Image (tube, rainbow, N blue to C red; front, side, top):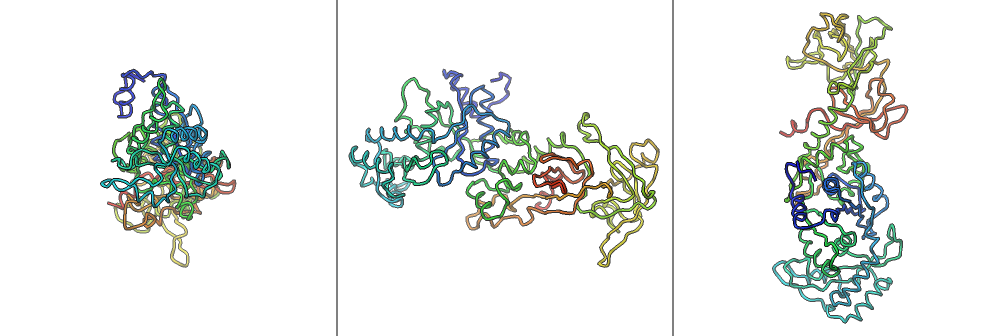
Length: 560
């Protein structure tokens, strides 16, 4: 670790204290243990960046361990997606491991607990067990099966393993104390009967270990030094340590669990269960819908690994739960794309503009900067002609003095081109403007060096040449929810706050011809409009662009 590091978060302070107390730096090992029951989201990114970041900082290995102990909800699709997301974020794991790798060892240790008199098979229903656990201010009641003999427990547990009992009829519980202050210590369940095929072990097992039993023992098997969990597992730490006590051997490294606050983001939900609802009910178009807070959704929307990593670093590691403003995430992608994205021109809601004094049939090639923030970005050629498309909202027949775009009898500059003056309009039978007629100042071309080119006008608008324009579909994504904390209302369902305008599809847009060869994932700044990237739905006939983020936060203005 660099001695020049200015400040340490509290997790790093714990590690530094352990090192100062004699922990061998070569024994440091971290892990990221997702359950493959859904796609990773921006909250998981905090844990990924923390654990893999510690690995990089301390030159220590980091395991990727899939917590695959519930075959009813886990799928290989999720395993593959998780691996892809971590790699895309730029991290490499030391070992790819699975809790299912340890099923036999966990079972053997459960047998050991039974033989020690520290575990028993309970025949009660889940409702009966829950009722007998008592409350935080009322002691629990012992199960009537708590004092079964070791021999009977071994026999029953073997029958559970062989599938001789129905699901829900028998469980294996740890024998700790039904009077413990911590409710999790009141004889927790270690194994349950679950007759489901596992994505890796098939039908080999009819019983599956619970998370609390699996978590710490897996850390111990892998010799993880610091098991970093989110804050909801703080009360589980006592049980984590109790389970370790039952199997711990001298001279082996004992894992240490510590907790940090999970990342919550405004205007979204972070529950995989709720995200799955959005997918299954067709509210969004899959896990990688660009409105989703999933890493795959953010990637498709145009967020970059660097922007997410920078966001995680800025948001920091906290000891208490809090909500991070989504504007911070948007700031980081804007900050990066401002420096890296090529500037291009696109018209999303086109209206035809005719320069009546520009020679018919004439074409020019204008030179435009690719990115003024990057001196090495170079320039590109943009064709110009008599007939152009401009944004419909950039023209008004009449407007007040604060409207600095095109209006009748007033001038604006066409970006990287000429100064024009609007003279008249052509309307259809419904009174809608279908053409704007204007004239141009032939000597005012940008960069020509003439006096007219130096003439200042208050407005500049973008455009594309009609003869050269490429058709495009543009998807304008906005926040999926209208409420800052949609799942915090006890009297309402989180789906009551779905934003009906979270997606607007513009299927009559046009972009400049330099984008014809753009590939999926390529990122651009549509000048004056926002940052966009090429979607995977693009075809050779029509490009599809996703808006990553607008240049200005119009949402904030609407909600002041």
